[in-house]
Length: 59
Image 1 (cartoon, helix red, strand yellow):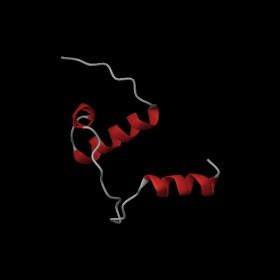
Image 2 (cartoon, one colour):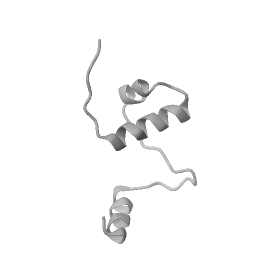
Image 3 (tube, helix red, strand yellow):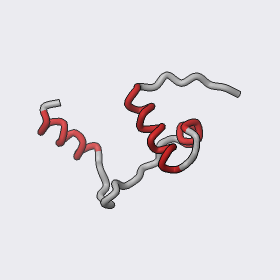
Image 4 (cartoon, helix red, strand yellow):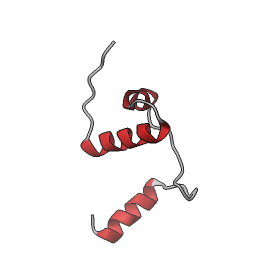
């Protein structure tokens, strides 16, 4: 069965990059949903941290 998804460009790029790193198809990443993962240096990035960085940058 095929399903059409309408997703933002930045999410699509993140999906493709994650799929490339995990050596799976982008559809496998999307089908499984995005699971929480840690950054390269093992620090967890929370929504609060993202919002703080946005505020700091004026975004």
